[in-house]
Length: 599
Image (cartoon, rainbow, N blue to C red; front, top):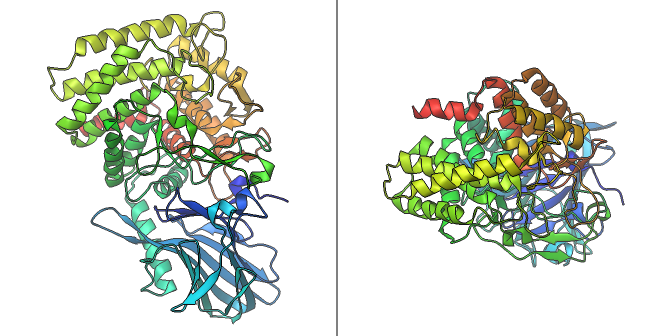
């Protein structure tokens, strides 16, 4: 059966969970009671077994769609020979000036208003808990329809009936009439106001949030939209940023590279903090910073955590056929068990930025961070699994060494900033300098005239683009300039589209271009002094966005979106690239901004 393109789905969020809406109006992904919960609607992973929430106007092949400006409210316009209607789909939110600017109402709203003529509305609610493994039965209680076996209830002002376990809702509406279908995923879901006010309040809340940013520079519209996506992927209870709203969307159609991305990776923690603060969202920056620091209580840092700060076992869902036949579908992520030394660099980099921008680092937190710097001073000579989570033996990955250098460098700077004279700074400095010397000797291949993936190898790795972005080398260093050119020569599969690497990673098949790396190419080109080239690549990448301005994790050479969606780090790298193009100086723009703020 045909599967919609991954990037054709609309993304709805209330910062507690998310829903994905196909172009035909079907909600095909919805997890309850939160982002990482059970997908009661999972038709995007199995057209037959996955649950679905259809809504359509009879006689219309498909609507035109857009987001209402500066919101995550989807507007769909349906036209038939007899009439026209507009549908607003959204997860309702309200302002909350105490804890955070956005509060979830735990209510999915599908509001229909007829603009002219007459239309016939048809909806079908068919949840299947257990990621499509179980049927449900319905019972009507206090005017609501409740699905047994799933924390879900449905309410509507249109006639409803149950047929073979499916709740069917139909009705004919005339011009000026409004109808609504509500799906609550909590007993305390907010329903005390009418659908019109829910829509207005949700729009006001998102627009007020977006308005806090005064950024009007290069790519401002894409930056604002990407910031909304990042906020939509941030968990309201902890501030954790999930990498994507989905699991098991394939990196190769029909392949096995299908992972659960509903986790927080620590990659680019400092960049996320910088972007949030720079774009006027300091409250979210502080919450994410606190979440990041809360993970430092563990003796050894793991590369990822769930929205509550924990890890979970990886499992295969054998009953699902997977998106477009891409098996297996998985929940949980085994990468949590890997050793990734770059994690230490990202967390210390984030901690330094957090302290520079807030001054809120506590003595207890610094004590924990200091312990992790000591660990890296002791263990930096060891191999690890690398930032790309290659499922094979440990190796001396150059990116991991660079990020270990970052860990020690930021530890030294934090000790100075906090005036800690008891930290073993001299040992940290000696280890940091030794790492730098070793990377320049063994991580750079003179024959290739490029940095390489692992020590003494000839394979390339797009994560090397971050070398100047973390301050390991200046962006215009001749070795970095040569590496950029070599990476494009070896890894580019389309204009601006970079693979992560070409190497045996222990898995069959291939993958698409990694869009994080593609936008990081833009930033690296800016720091290399090649702004015009960077702007050209950015413009090309902008044309790869889906019809609603959203990006998946990867892209095939023909433009097919691949991987989980929408991908937080693609949108974060877009923000970084745009701000660097706007600054276009010798220093990375966000760090330059932070230095001015902190001075």
